Length: 480
Ligand code: ADP
Ligand code: GLC
Image (cartoon, rainbow, N blue to C red; front, side, top):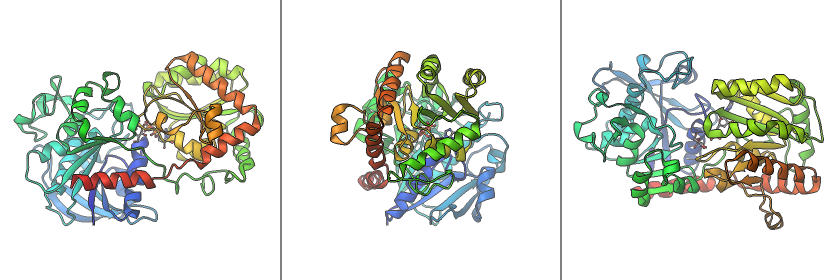
């Protein structure tokens, strides 16, 4: 049986800041169902230690020179899964209030290098087969576990490594003087190693030393080999293109299914699509929007960062509202963007609703209530909300980049005829292009028969993990 350690810094429902959390639950579950012995490795954040019932596997592991010894714990993932979870227990590093990467003021934790080097080092120890579980593949995710392959280059081991890139924009860059404290060899500090413009880059370490690299969509795999998307690592990625694969994420259809979703005001399927409107009516009431059955409600659920193209939305919002649409947004992040959004909501409380903070239930309710989902990202490695939206009959408007380009099929007459149209796509990251695309969507919205046809095609689109989980299994097998 194929044995895989899935090392990650977040996993729904224990701890999640974005799509990585969703994937770190859904993909291992899908692999488990496909017969892989996959186990998670997570840091012992308060929410993880609180939710799981854990046993001590090892209580005296020395990972880094300046840190105390740590404990390795083991338990089972929540929910109806048989997914084993390993937890790195080190109160000094992980037991704190605030976010998992940042404090309550939005500043990165001062010791993130030590925190995630420790996690990476523990993942590497699994590859030396010093614990009962002896994985053949260590599957690392993003910069937080990027050092694992670099540590393995320094020690004898028995496993192959795969690193998945979920977002090139976050690289884990730290001062070079930490090299010894992080237990990295002096030899690793060079241009073909962990060095990045005079600093250390955890992501680069992973990309240099891992046996294989994957990212979360075929288009993003091509894009990151170009300077515009590669954040200084495009050349390295191009040189490793033979080991680089793009595998699109799937959706956990147990968590995201309009027929069974417990967060919804009313469950529905395509056959009972009229019931979707009930979700719109009740959500509008709850949020103080005036309910307009025949006017489109546009939804957004997003981290508020430059990546997500909110500036494009803000610059054409008055025009969108003029067309009769309303906006409901849930987000958290950049305070300036929050203030700008708040400004619109204060001026037009019946047309614009904004909620800041993290709210899982509201996210599901918006997916069900909205007619249209807006995702004009500047770049998007995969994106999950456009897929949740299609599955919920909420037609997405997306920019043609990364996983958005790979999952949403533009509503053109030809695509409609072929039965494959699932949303609306625009190319350039310019406000007027977005506006034209929104107007095009509204035109279709005003033609109920055509709208239903696209909804049907979107809801029939296969968003499940089945094919992507098989692609990961093939990738693991190729590595062995
Ligand atoms: P990213 O990982 O770049 O943020 P994705 O589209 O891959 O983008 O995944 C985002 C995930 O996080 C989705 O599950 C989305 O519903 C969720 N999400 C984002 N912001 C919030 C929020 N404020 N409250 C609840 N869920 C959120
Ligand atoms: C990142 C990306 C997002 C992707 C997610 C899961 O957060 O920004 O596009 O869907 O990872 O892979």
